[in-house]
Every structure is written in C-alpha cells, then in structure tokens.
Amino acid sequence: MPSSHDFSTRAIHSGQSFDPTTGAVIPPIYQTSTFVQDGIGGFRGGYEYARGGTPTRTSLETLVADLEGAKHGFSFGSGLAGEDTLLRAVLAPGDHVIMGNDVYGGTHRLVNRVFVPWGIELDTVEMTDLDAVRASIRPNTKVLWLETPSNPLMKISDIAALVEIGHAAGVLVVVDNTFASPYLQNPLADGADVVTHSATKYLGGHSDVLGGAVVLNDDELAEKIGFLQFAVGPVSGPMDAWLTTRGIKTLAVRMERHSSNAQAIAEALVAHPAVERVYYPGLSTHPGHEIAARQMRAFGGMISVGLAGGAAAARAFAESTELFQLAESLGGVESLISYPSEMTHASVRGTALEVPANVTRLSVGIEGVDDLLSDLLSTLDRVNAL
Ligand code: PLP
Image (tube, rainbow, N blue to C red; front, top):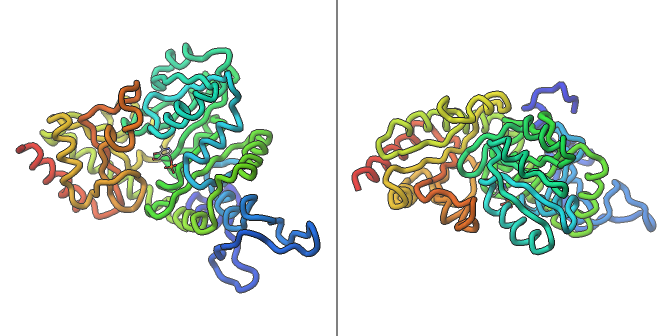
C-alpha cells in the first residue's frame, strides 16, 4: 500500500488482499495449525507451521507496521507477551532498564518480578523531568521505556526530547503507544526505536480480543524478535489476528469520536464540585498540553478523575455509573470506568508507581456524548450528596 495514502485508506487496505480462490473481499481466517508440503520442504505460500506464521497473522503484522510507519511488525497473544519477547531480545543479565513512573502496572510487574530476578536492574523515573531521566542513565542502561499518555495519570512525555537523551547514551527507546493508537501518534516518526501496543485496546477496539504488537525498523533486532516469536511461541492465533485486523479498519473514525467525546466530558467534569482534578491532555490547563498538541493528532479517549471526597467518593463513583461499566481494560467502543489503585494498578501498591486512592479512570467510548455526560454528571451529583 503506497505510504502516500491517507491513514484511513491504509487501515482498511494495507496487508489485505482478496482471496484468489473465491474472490472473497475479506481475506479468510486461516484456522490451521499446519500447511501441506509439496514434497519435503516444498512450501506453497511460505508457511510451514502456525507458530512460525499464518497468512492471517501476516495480514495483521503488515497492517500494524504500515500504520506505525515501521519496516517490521510482530503480533502476539497479548500486549505483555509482546513486551516480554522484546525485552528478551534486547536484555541480558546485568543490563539496566529505565521506565516511566506511571507505566501500566503489568509492564512494571513484568520487569520487576520476572526480569529483575533474572539479573536485570530497574529504575522508575518521572519521564516529564528530562534532567531526572538524564541523571538516571548508567553505563549499563539498555532500555528507556515510556508511555505517553501514561496510564492512568495521563502524563505526557516529550518523545523527541527523550529520544535525544536516550540515543546520546546509546539506549534503545521504547514507546508503549497503546493509549494513543497509531492514528493519534507515531513515535517512530519522532525517533523512537520500538513501539509496543496492547492490541486488546484501541487496535482491536471492541473488547472482544486479546493481542499485542511490536513494530520497529532495525533489521537485526527484528530478526531476534522473529526468532523468539517462533522459538517461544507467544503468538496470536488466527481468529484473534483476524478480529484485530477487522477492528483496525475503523480505527481512524473511532479515535476521532473517542477524542471528541472525551474532550467534551473532560471540560464538563472540571466544573463539577465533586471533582478535585481532571487528568486529560486535551485541557489547556494540563501541564503536557502543548507537547501533546505537537506530537498527537488529537488527545484520545482516556480521562482520569480525582474526586474531592477521596477514596470513598472515588469508589462510590466507580461503582455507581450505568453506561460506564466497571471493568478493567480500555479502548473499546463501549465506555468503561475503573478504580486503578485496586484494579489495573493493584500490583504497584506500595511502590513509587502507586496511584492516588481518589483517582478513577474513564475509557470514554463512542456512544452518544449527551448520554455519557448525563450518566457521569448525575452520578457525581449523587456522590457529592453522600
Ligand atoms: N500497555 C498498556 C498501556 C496497557 O494498558 C496494557 C493492558 O492494560 C498493556 C500494555 C498490557 O496488554 P495486555 O493486557 O494485552 O497484555
């Protein structure tokens, strides 16, 4: 697919070719574990065994790489499976990782509880403080890992500035682009080395599939990741790869609507007396607003809300909305609410990554914005009256 085509066009057509046997417009789900050989080693389409690859997985990998402007794309059975594979490909015992201090709790748990016991050193740093990042780099630092917007405090890191710091020290810069999606932000274009996704979120977009993606330009690192993907097997199955590909076709229109709904909701929540603070980069008062405006196309569908009434009010809010369903995860067409300190970020309680107990997180869906506003504001009125 020519890179001159618009994002929406590429999201629908890249990596997709109609089925030559039947003419079906949508490529079939190749639900097979193995491929017949015309004599030993005679592979018809280059496929041998599904752990090594399937046409359905290739479609998705081609598509995600194209949308992120990358040469290589890999898809996995979950976001964490992709992160694990990438880190195995890059790290050896004795290496040092620097991670943002409010990355997804599961990413911190992966490094802290799986890689640290294996001999990796980990520091968590405030990624919006460039001097602190610079000061945390050591001779053995291999990876600088950031999320922007971050989960759940919606901090914005300056990707280009962090890339400059990382590259000056020969450090690989990895951006978890899950919250923004490739429609809103392309970190490789800002100089990052690797982009990861939990495809479970905006890429899939319908809360019906678990998946991950890793994209990059470097041939040597891509070869190592491809080898591990085959040798270890954390791959996405054909059905999951197909569902993710289908989800991505509408990514551009979904992200526009997620963003406009979230902007209206963030602006309304700021004015409510039950609310102490709204964390949303689309608000001009957000400390990262200008950086976000520079590196993102719009501000996304994720908002965190700090309640004036503390933990009790936050719990009551999260448990009382109707359209916003209480659940882990994000990025689906339907709105969700969560209480990070006891849900997504329970694993980082007691660490520097602990989330304030008065914070709830909204994944704003693409429903009618007036319905969403009325659900949130009427619930906040009730919480305020408690
Ligand atoms: N990165 C971010 C920002 C996430 O929010 C998540 C999951 O919530 C992950 C990575 C992990 O992805 P998965 O749950 O698909 O393994």
